[in-house]
Image (cartoon, rainbow, N blue to C red; front, side, top):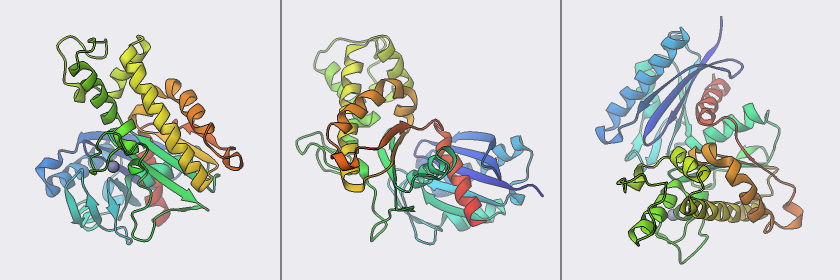
Length: 320
Ligand SMILES: [Zn+2]
């Protein structure tokens, strides 16, 4: 009988579900909004609905799938059954494995979203070759999955890998965590748009990045930033340059600490803007990496937003 694995990328704003075959090829996907404000049960139902829609497109019964993997934005219990803490969803100790298994009728495993996406890149795109690898995801926030000596770095209390909260400028802007100058507060999509907003508020030129009358910069997506950069928008270029500089700094710190073979970059910002970003990120990083760790490949993933669902399906496959 043919094997099928389900992979879900559960984000703070959207849920992406995919059905995969045993070779990790994607057969069908479905996307829906997360709407975390509607509460835990409603989000569970939306996950199940997205899985059922993807399964229907792939022509399979989800109850007969070999397993489902879920990448969730938070810390996961060591038995992969609960989401211990997910600030973007406002969840604590959520028994997601049991609840989804009851509704889907197939086994479910949970993983941290960044580790799961890093698994997708490592296993499918890099054919499981690098033993030491750092994946950094630049989007609304900044997260990472770190593999050292072939295993994921978890730390003593499963809190390792919070790369987004590395302090890169102690006098920098306040981060969501309360500290000043975290990598995330300097270089995420949110940081970019905060900078654009304050430039406009300070009487700066209304640049092509902000269409006439549209001052709600928080709604600007990465695609819009790309079009602004392509059109030569000076403010867009300046804020993106700063993002690349701080990303390079973060990578240099990580390379000096962990000496990875590969640094893989992903997330919405990188997916849209890697041709502009990669050369600048490499320059800023390589200038600061010690000679012994300088043989590192800094790349952008080609999996795009499929990294998460692919890794989640692989998580299920590994367990099943
Ligand atoms: Zn922070």
